[in-house]
Length: 332
Image 1 (cartoon, helix red, strand yellow):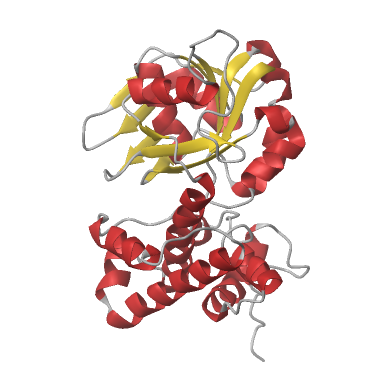
Image 2: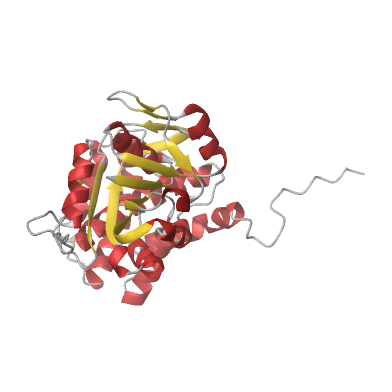
């Protein structure tokens, strides 16, 4: 399958490398230092299971030069989705699928607005991975999965023209699985997206305000309780919006947190701690906004959002006042 990967960070680097190593026709859409690194040194993924090295990946900053493709995987940040989805247009043939993997609950709608309903899938992923430097990704182990569906949640919604052939979604699932990626087409994709949202947004927000990895957060009773309360708020918002989140969703998410490597962190807290723009608006900010619209109080996420907002705006250069500390005046 011919596949374009937008975003060669943790998720895009790991899944793209697995697909390329399995022999799929993968092209990485990148720019700047990442494009230079891929062109000069290739792509390296460090894993407990063994290193993946793609010596000469196909990489470009001009999607039109590699069109068309059968699948586009969007692995960048949520605040980039609309811009990147527009950039996929030269790649699209009639049956091309665009699969967003962002940790939010609104990315698929943005993709559909920019590419058209027929191209947009709903998706999510799980991987504890991050870019050590351009072109080098470190995976800490744990789950590496992609779950997706056609919009509307019908696993086999879009069939190809040949009688008896696999649906578009099933062909994609088989391709991902053939590369060693745990791939699933859930019966209820909205529930799957919100279950992931419940875990990652809560752990990311609590991890960011405490500046601590999951092992420390879960071991301290008071921060563990804060994490559980954050998850409960998202459960309430999701249920108020008609999502069929199970009664034990929070308990299952906490059990999952207990099984993660103790040094695991989320991209939100890494970005904020390292001075980069983060997904705060699409994560904790979205919980506050969607909760307000549904009439559900979200005090934990409101606290997290307000606590991190100035740092986020500072990284975006959006404070409206000098961000550098004033120089001390000489004493007289």
